[in-house]
Length: 487
Figure 1 (cartoon, one colour):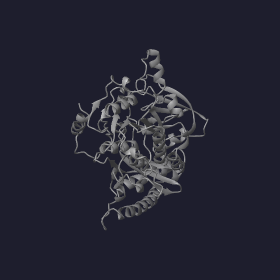
Figure 2 (figure 1 turned 45 degrees about the horizontal axis):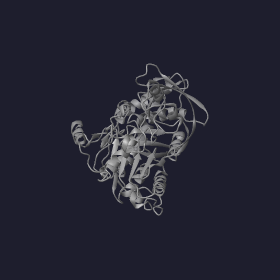
Figure 3 (figure 1 turned 180 degrees about the horizontal axis):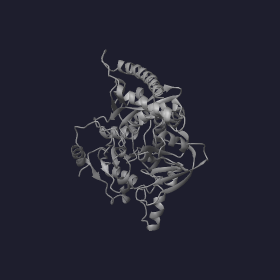
Figure 4 (figure 1 turned 90 degrees about the vertical axis):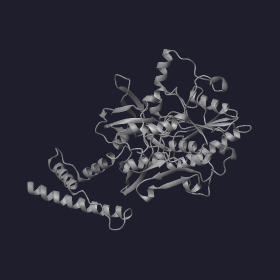
């Protein structure tokens, strides 16, 4: 038996070494000077083949080689950071469907934390959102299946499914003594990425819930509609990116391009490979496949100068942070709300064949002024002190194995010193009389209990931060909307 195991191990070792060598040569060829090669970790490869052989020989049930290799790939990627992953054929297909804005499921953005599924943000107008699932909820069971032991891909696959089919989520929530059970019914998740309306004459509101393939074009239509509905010149615009978990990078560039001068730098990325070093600007080649159909150039000229406030919170991540950072750095918009999520890394989808792929973190992205958002987020110009629930919200820096900020030379104290003088707390008084949006009514204890069960509706008459944004624009109507805030 020992001889057979040794022979088996040698065969596997030779095969894996051969594959690793070929990958090593091809990967290094474009990134290192000729003749410079990194040695393979021979001892670790031997350990791998020994474990492989032991499982094949001693595991309680027979296991296919394909499963073992797939799980090894899974382990390699999930061990790097929370966003790198192996995508089997189903997961790869679901990713493509998700970016197009329609799929069957529950409507939550999730990550894996300590073997459990953690909710980053529920998506508006979905079963999870309406049921009261909250950011930071820890999903421990899907129906009768414990989440512990499942990969993130497997958990997502179980949550998605045919519309009108039931599923029960059991979650642990900070502050609750017992797990909470949510019976849900899957639905076709049609994400309306852009919503808009006039708050009152002269003041428009645009909400982006997620960045998809058509987000830029849908935003252009929303802007056109607002300008046509408004009798006279636009006096102010609120761009709402709260709880927007991100999406496609070119969507973020398109949205930024709508408000910034042409050719303005929106974001740049930096990684180890030359392909990972990019500068994306407010130009058609960076957000359009067909540059002949440039919807941004057809926008009303006033959209480049109308006073703006951009709303963010701890659920604003990735692409929404790119937009907020670009508008803030170019002094095009005041950013109001709470510290954003801090997801400042770029994932590249690398197809492997057989309809599978890997999602690999290849770069960090930086705002036009060179600030890394990774594990830090965007600091608003005007802080919302009323958002007390934001203190407990899950952020990138809370995720296990999160990527570092990439700017180790800047200490936390130095970073805080830079932003503190420009931050101002949103005043609670002074708001209601200055706008046509009614503030929320005082609530008794029973009302508070009910409100905990249903999430606040952004853009409604009870949206206090929106009220404050409109008030801010009015107070600064005689000045530049992007003027520095006086303490």
